[in-house]
Image (cartoon, rainbow, N blue to C red; front, side):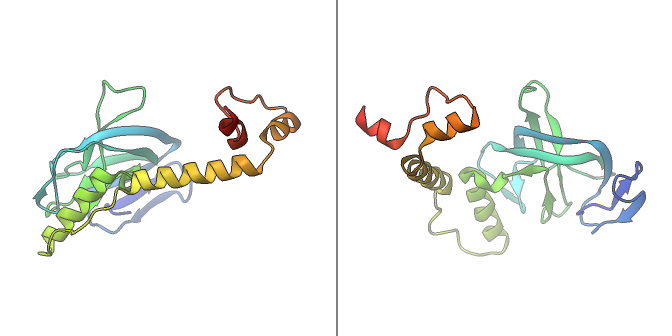
Length: 183
């Protein structure tokens, strides 16, 4: 949507092409096979919004239906390697010539503290705002909250009965909170 056009030569949604927002020098070409794979990488230019980024790994799920055609002057946002294919990096997304707009196929990009903190620092600097006073380690906080939720469910449910009724095997490492506390 951020590129020049979206092309649908196979008629997967609507045959033909549609003009996009025109903010990035790319065209998106829809294809049958949807890519949904974990991926990791690095920013290709080492900056966001014209400000240098401290080195941090990008990660998320690469999700898209089709390919990106890079037009003249296009610069990829990142170089990423798909899980299971770490030897080959491929370009991901695009950054506008002025560095103020970028797009990426990495979903969950902001879930990781390092990138999110760098994004906030660089975007504030680009707007001539002071640096953030406090940056929250949200990833760890979210993990802790999910662990608490899992413990609450585990203690409230008879997981052995659920696995027995569904006919699913119970994993060796799965314990209810009551079982864990009695050990």
